[in-house]
Figure 1 (cartoon, rainbow, N blue to C red):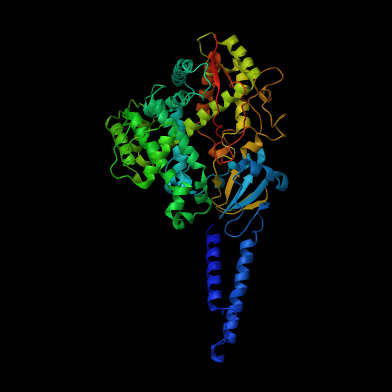
Figure 2 (cartoon, rainbow, N blue to C red):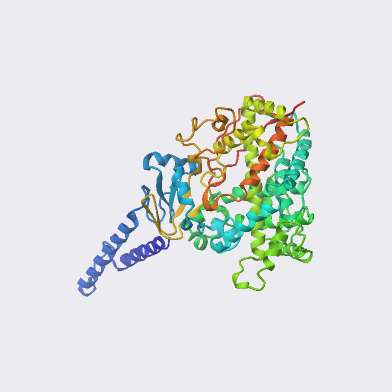
Length: 579
């Protein structure tokens, strides 16, 4: 990256020097004494030769890289905006093989397609870091806080802490599953209000998922029809949309952060993504305290805030409070937890974090924990945990509505093993092998995060004999694994029997199945998400059927603007209560 910028700067400088020293054509020298001397001509020739050399260097691909697209100096080769990035990358496999290189902007990207290659690469320490993308740095400045975008010791400690707290707070335990069952029961009551209508899925679906995270993080929850919880769901969705919008240009052209004028930054979403984070954290604090100001009275509001307010008003009438001092409010919430902390009876993830923070009082040099880090961990759990699980449930219901024969088979299976009004715990899931197969097949078909979260090479290394220079962005193409004919009988069709053994049992160990990524950076919330999805779908299908509105065909087309998260396009469905 630095090399590209230096070459670009030298190239521009030499061009300026060349044309400054060169006499304009058609203008004769005033006198012989003003004609260029032989020394000047030699200087011009040397500058011109060096210019050609720099152009050659910028066009020349370093040796040892995987095959692929090198592109033009400085800009590389930009992807199309009319086809989603994962599909463009997938097409390159036919031309270049299982490992390809693509220079986009000032960065070199390496994409991995083969399951074994991905598995071996992602378990390596030198490929465990996150790149210094602008969008990542908004959440984790300098990769020093949080869980998803941090690196090094900070990431290792936060990952261990999060996994431990997910376990201790109930992941895999009956207490948390009982809370899920209660949310599912309330979801049934809310869905009954929406039966027989041609409409989108109710937002209560997202609130039910949200409440599971609330219970673990802050020991609280909200009613499924609570308007402020609905606003939070919309805000999370908007935040994810901004993450994969045109703001991506600031990732591949880092100099835009310094040189781009304000109007361009505004248009590309530079300010919006920064304000999204503040709004999520501010809303988290207010929801934790059960306080909400519907229409804030603001006196001095930045132009960006006005734009965001207008955007929210267009987004189903969202009204959020306070655009200022958000992080300070989060700090106050943490202080309240500190004041009421009882180390012998921790209530939630915040308490566990504060207890661990206290343990480093006597050795501050070893401490990587802080209030800012806690705020970021909470934020990432909400954005990642709520949006992905809710998007998956929306995908699953869309597939069920499109394939009524699959839906009917699942309902027959559920009716046979679960009494009306009863529940099935996750450890009893072997009684519903086809439901397990359905869940896995939806994961396989949609690939919620088609190319995972980006990795970077913290040092020069090799993959399958190819040279991977330091700071190369490495992306495993998970969707390609999950649609590889080597592993799947019908790779491009919805076919739950991919996961059914000949004896009718569920086949849990399928190579090429990587919906939660793999290796050192695999999703820490995988187990929680699996339980949530199983519990919610069992109860939903026990009580309701789903169908497209008359005359409407549901399509599974991707959004061409998708860069990171493959959320379903908005769709309408008719909910029918089963009797």
